[in-house]
Length: 171
Image 1: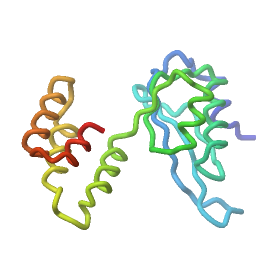
Image 2: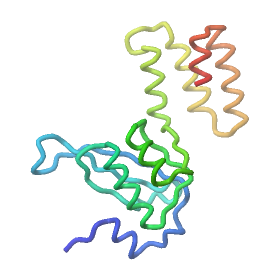
Image 3: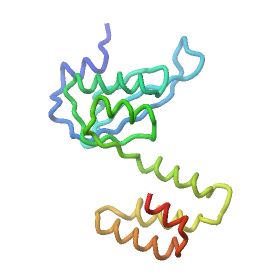
C-alpha cells in the first residue's frame, strides 16, 4: 500500500528544517472517474524546495483549502507567509487554520491582475507604463532600496500625474 505524501512527511521529515515561507499552487490534471480535470493542490517550502504536502481535490475552494491547511497544521508546520494565487477560498481557510499567517499574491498573478486592469493585451495606452513597472519593480528590484527607487521612477516617469496609474502603484 502506498502511503499518502502527508504521512511520509510526518514519518520521515524533521518539520523544523522547513522555512516559515510556503508556496501553494494547484495544477489541474485528468483523473479517471472525473469528467473534468481536478486540482492537485500542493505546497513547496520556499527555502528547501521540498513538497511537505500535496493532494487531489474536487475544486480549489474553501473546503479543499481548509482540509489542505489542516493537514499542514497536523504536521506541525506553521507558516508565517504563504505565497499563492488570488483564491477567495484560500484566504478564508487560512484565516481559520493559520490566523496569524500573511498571504502574499505571487508576482506572476499580481502582474496578471495589473495587465487585466490596464487592458494591455487589447489597448496599447498603458503598455509603456506596465513594462516600466515590470522592469523597475519586479525584474530589477531585489532589495528594499532598489524597489523604492523603482517605485519613484515609475511614479514620475510612468504615471506622469495620472491618478489612474498612481492608484495602480498605490494598490
